[in-house]
Image (cartoon, rainbow, N blue to C red; front, top):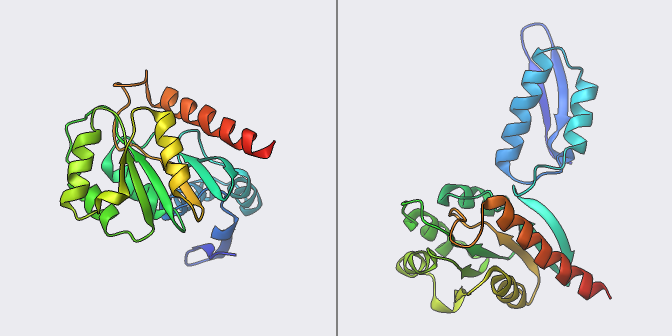
Length: 209
């Protein structure tokens, strides 16, 4: 179990939910759930209904979306992560070793902060870079001190999945969290996420045969 979230004022103390019941990962989602629960309670929703909602909400597509697991690798679709800051939030929500797929079309932002975060993260097995911004992200990672053997280039999303999964030799999470827009290779972030899901679902299905 996690921690009990309580509403308290001068006249009452009410348990709203337990963070261990959340089905979506990350400290940011705990904060989101607390805000939603508070708003619902103040508008008259009962704690029982709040707890039920917290325990059944599985998140939204393309936002730290669990796709499947196979061979010790869990595949997470976070295609909506189109800024470096959102990738930092995503990796903070993970536990254990991971590989991350980064890159897409440019939004004119710096990748230095993201690169520093990833270079300092001992859980990172490999960063797979793709798309138009791949070279700029790789440069930022190298400047931040990430060794070259932990950076891999891929020509397509399918190749990126292949590299990332194969390099997680001891298992872990393969995270699509690009830090960029998608317009160099896809219509939008939703198409990018859908293609990622198609690729990894095929891998999981083939492994199960």
